[in-house]
Image (tube, rainbow, N blue to C red; front, side, top):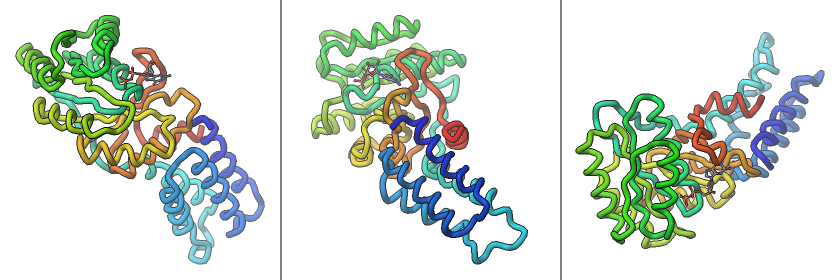
Length: 296
Ligand code: GDP
């Protein structure tokens, strides 16, 4: 199911209720059943879905509603607010400041969209007057540096990397030091991924983090990852303690409920979403605006 279909299903469940003549327990239950089924099908964690149902029922307590209350409006608002809660951990992400070097490190599994998102983010800040650059600390995957180089060149963003050094910690440290001396505002460090969560990967992340002391670590999650997102993000959180999430490929065929559940599992805000393969396909993530758009 794609994200837009999830939105349509929820909207139609709410609209069925608001167009019915009687708004009672039975109608509310039918609406909740449909919304919850849609969320579960979209891979949102089952416990989160159960909480959402409970909270809406708690807000819309027919026995205690006064006569003057507009039930339909109350229900619409409760659904909206609970969906926002699902994607909003109430944790403010780090905001880079101009005039100092802000180091941002990326982590995530191979193929999640790290390198692509690094370049998109560098361009995003560059367009907003920050002096931004990229460091390729992925010495694990052959071709990683070439890919970053290509992306960076296209976006006209200065980059650092090497074909000969095999120690990712050294590359990361050297790159960050060089760009700090050159007074870059935003230094983005791309790290290597693996096909799976592995001890070596986590050890490497911790070492790079210690070497470059990032102001922010961002985890990149593929929206098609499904239910595995929660366990994966928790495992990454334990080692890399990231402070923000970027969800990629939201233009694809997955509704992304798994990736959304990672927010709750790690209490970490989504900061951007990837909406395509191109450099400009990056959108700032704002919980309220996202849910408004989802529900059309
Ligand atoms: P990495 O291994 O984590 O660095 O992943 P890459 O940045 O190489 O991305 C893997 C693939 O996903 C590439 O083909 C990218 O073009 C693609 N990709 C990344 N982000 C998005 C996105 O938001 N939408 C789409 N459609 N493709 C994406």
